[in-house]
Image 1: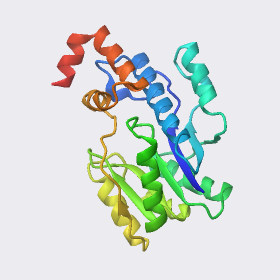
Image 2: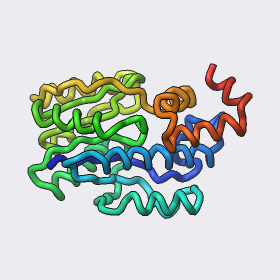
Image 3: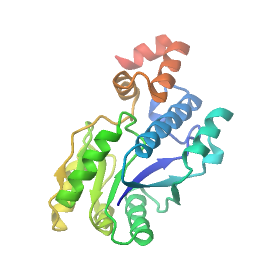
Length: 233
């Protein structure tokens, strides 16, 4: 069985999705992040034959969300193993999360995603798992030059991420080169747009109009339509 590892931050205002501000406020950004996380976890939950694991920075109990959303988040983690992220930077946190999964689930392959692609579906995740099983490694490029998914037959190979600069326009290419340097030949997953800035949020929301994520993005449009329109240009 494949471990499906979700890297996430607790949706705390001022600490998550800050590049959505403006037009979003820090509180708006926290609600959008919570919606993205819930949509992502729902897609994982509905993917057959995977073991769900959440690697979390912060505590969900500290989330700046409504009582109803807090209850949803608590319920969504039922049946999940929740690991605390550790490490000073993103590269170390990613590598450590894979190492922690390797220790907890020996001999399991791992497909790792984040909470920035709420448009993911169970079908797309299942296809990625199948490709990982065949190829031994997969990498899903993101539109901004990063990547949205990394799959490894041996999650200990994620140690190569420690040498890769994160959140740069060539992070995806550098990750591919690092994996090749490890002797792997990662298969390419379809490219996706992840949510970093406001235009990303609008574009992704349009692809999944019935999602929690889209409803939270729409709430910002309704509250601050002039600012949102300006930020989207």
